[in-house]
Length: 347
Image (cartoon, rainbow, N blue to C red):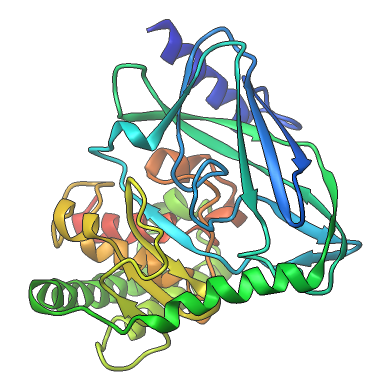
């Protein structure tokens, strides 16, 4: 279809062209109160856009929506990082924007950033939205965006109170992986350890072309980094009673929105596995670049700061992995998950 071919061509240009990528999305940020930001998203293209909301500035969960700086200092993000299902998505996971029209969303930047010092902060965002055809929920490509930079004045005491309230939510619920969820969890962790160990060995001394396919290089430094990450993943998945992270089977931070398989709060060493993880994924798959429970665990474990502190860069799946730079692949959770799947499945 013309709509898809046009946007796919645009996505290809975005990954290949130097400088600012062309895009039909114009996003302007403005201050909307103490540590609150309003984003006005305009479709400047000729076709209606049906964009995927989950994990973006349109998501109500405390995902990374902006970069914040004060002078030369970048304020670290300490909210949640997700793994998103790339299949069988619901319509409510999408937002349609007709050509020439705009939508608005307001979000709080204090929950997932320590702004307790207060004062002036610069806020900006770059990334990409995945999209689907108008009559489908299959993700078929992505369109990039880059916002303006807005300067905001923050009341540090009020912002700090909101951040503390968010992080204290997790202390009210104890680990509740029991019954069938416990059985699934135990199997997933065993498989996670097995796949991570195999990927560790492959990264250290296996096929150079396979490593380069996912990480853009097979240099000794890349081999060392990747094998080291998988070694730490294997260690974390080796036990249900020890390790660096708390493991939950219910939505303790109210962030299992549509399409979310699991999420991690790296700053709290906390992982949550949503109902979709238990109902929509097989324990293991030998299909190349498909999702399962074991590689979802690998994805989430790499988000932990003690393991790698990976990011998502707003995208998931093999095609997105291939569009990233070598440096981004080394810090992208789904790259590790897909490489582990490739080694297991013989892709």
